[in-house]
Each structure stands twice: as C-alpha cells, then as structure tokens.
Image (cartoon, rainbow, N blue to C red; front, side):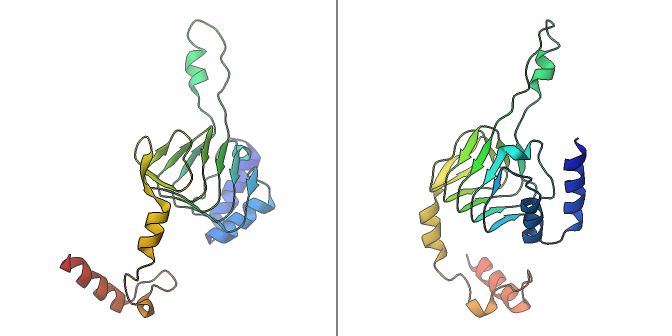
Length: 182
C-alpha cells in the first residue's frame, strides 16, 4: 500500500461526517473527479482512486468496494513463465446515483445518471440511465422514475420525521402499528 493512500485512509478514520470526509478527499485530489453534493460513508480509499470519477448528487453507503484492478496477472504469470500485465480500469458514476451498502463496483463500468444500486449488488457492466439494479451480477429490476413517484406519497406524518438520525418514540410507535397492519 502506498504511503500517501495509507495516510489519507488514516485521516479519514479521524474525520466525522460524510460531507467532511468528501471535502478532505476533494482537497487532496484523491479521485480523478469529485462533484458537488457527494456523500461517501466508507473510510476505505480504493487502490488507484484516481481512476474513479464521481459526478454530482451521489450517495455511497457503507462498505461499498470500488475495484479498479484485479490480480489475475499474478496467477497467470506463474503458469509457463510468461509475464502478464495487471488489469486496471476506470469507474465513472454520473449524477443522481445511490449505491447501497456492501456493493462492489468493478473496473471499466459506467453508472448512468438517475440510478439506484441495491445493497449487496455486484456491478460488472455499464448501468443504463434511469434504472434500479440489484443482484450478482447486477441486473435491471426497476425504474428510477417509478420509485421517485412512489416516494412522493407521504409514508408517515411529516411532523414525525427522523431528526439528527434519531427516530422518536412517536414515529417508532406509528411505524410498528403500520407494519403490523400489513
């Protein structure tokens, strides 16, 4: 692991808040590009982070792994004595994207605008704009616009909305009541 990446990773451990971590990463030009309104829960810096481009309004949940390389060359190079190159590639994430926890994003992929990637997905190829994907490997399972329309409906009284990442006892009671009805 290169010293500079280790240092940045150590620093991220000490920075609270996703927004603050992203500002630190931007200031130090860790990614190829990092747009506005980007939230990154993880404190891991991928190898070859300079091969990752993040556009605007992106949310990356915890434990998302960006793989900008593989190590198959080390296996192949021990077979027959021929030397193989390390495979490296770029990852580009366009505007208005959410990537769920524990997802893996492979090299040589583009994630189009207005995309949701379900938790635990493995993205191995480009994701078309306006889609919801999930699974291993990730496949289209829905539409961004359809989900956005469904979310316009108020699911609980707005005055009970969580504040400072805390659910009030009133909201807890309301949600359990609705959950048990259905």
